Image 1: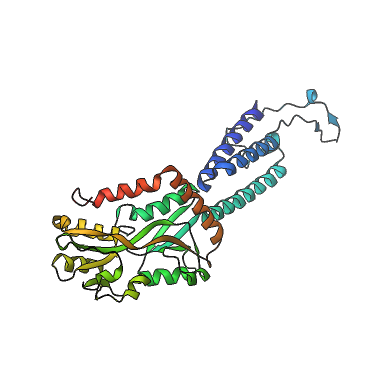
Image 2 (image 1 turned 90 degrees about the vertical axis):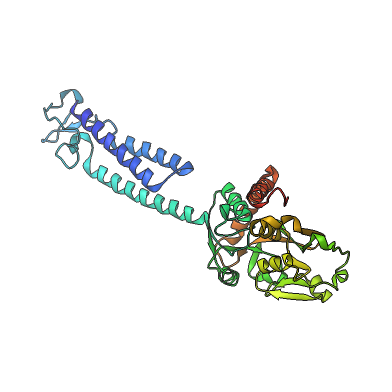
Length: 348
């Protein structure tokens, strides 16, 4: 009975310590299953029935039935560091097993932390509403698509919002795993691995509805004043047409100038123009009209830095998650959800 009490007490304490270590380390899945097996083996080794024959002080071996019985009873946890260790198990063997077990904990913890670190990506982005922005719902619909695709393949995502030039440069240097979004350009391939396409930019013109402006080719727009943003890379077709352009520092200024009749057209991304009109000029939504066709449709990409660790595997995993979302219709659902936040009934 004393041996059973001692073993039961130590086994219970061992189980509590084990559970605490598992919770602290955050083990799960296959790692947890492996640890469960290790636990069973170690428990069996330590707490195996010790009904072997004992030797008397004179060196003679006595059978089990003739072993001397002692009335040495243990308190529930008195086996730790007490004289009843020999009755429970071999103390030296137990210490070796204990130290080996601690070594296993440390190794598995390191592996678990390393694996978790490999399954996290840190991305850079800039303010580009409604596609993405630090203060938008879910940081914008492109951000939600990217984070959801990564989550499907077991990654955590952290996004840092910076000015575009800085975000691009730091990702190029490998300080971030990637940057979004960018258009494909051949010269960027030396620094970046491009993801599968994300929702595209439609570049074209907004005009005032009352002006009844239309076009078939860009040269049809020669008589009009067109607002553009200084520093933007415009489509080559637009630059080659040599139209009458007026530069400002941001897209909102162009929409304001258009609403007041100071210019005739605004060159802008369709969704961005719609977002600005609906959020900043809600009472004038019906004044504006989008001119079809767009002059350029450019796919957007998440660009993975080739200087980042495991960039190729990360890119492949992301593409796999993105494909799952597309097959399930989740991408269109995310876009629709976000558009409902800022498109009024008049502007649909």
